Length: 383
Image 1 (cartoon, one colour):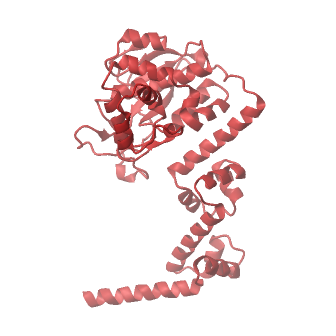
Image 2 (image 1 turned 180 degrees about the vertical axis):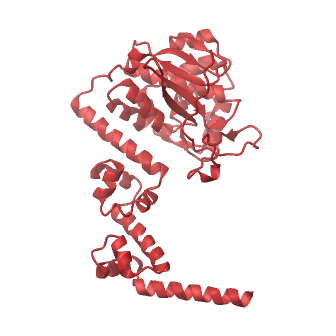
């Protein structure tokens, strides 16, 4: 029986439905997309190749047309880190046009699945191993994998949990293909952690996608249904409550640090470090404060910033200089600015501002006022 649609949290896609064959799903809360702080378009490189890594590996081995694909994507598939590369929705679609439409879809899908495990999904897949049980792992992966769909965990009345597949883009041609890859990826990862266990009570798809029910049931090990309103996996309670495999304390500590980095990195990806610091300027006076707000250690923060080629001191200077200039332009007093930016007194602020920008606060304010006066005179003369 088809289940009623239950909408997920608002996603970030907001392309127009006027496009001929692809359009983003509108915000499900009913608000205008213009109010969305971050709008992912079909050409934005937001999605990793992890979810199709087995398909690409098979194509490499069989000398399939990967050279043209590499050229179009601008990605070297011979490099070991290529699965972490980010591509746009349109580029990911190209992968399917090159490799999915050319052969037996069931064979391609299950061959892909045979080549992946929890380690195939980069730091997020590894970090999930630090969690206590499979249910926690599903929730973590649903929130941190960079995919062209929303994976939405939904609690069931019997105490179990389903994972809903919600497309971020309206694309009838490839919708079912993405459902297939999403769900076999989930099962491949689950089986690599808990071999031999029954993972789900049922798997539901919106369409067959050219793969027989018997073939899918053989792979998933449970009933499969087509023509559903929404694609989903109904996980078994036994599997959900199963603890993660035993890991020695040393490895678990390293995985816990990795989990910390993934959580912080996801926060900083959605809102740039500079934006995050600007938004919390009144709360951040040191790198310790920034780390605390992000929920990570100072060492983890330092590693994250090092990857971006920047230090906390540089970011802090940039944010405070920008804010100081804004306040000076709006006529705030030196003492008020110094207090807002966390300086002990006016003198400390004046010294820092001169060191950061090469002019004193008073000189900056005067120059800004002069620019405003000259601009006003020109406008008056023009009109």
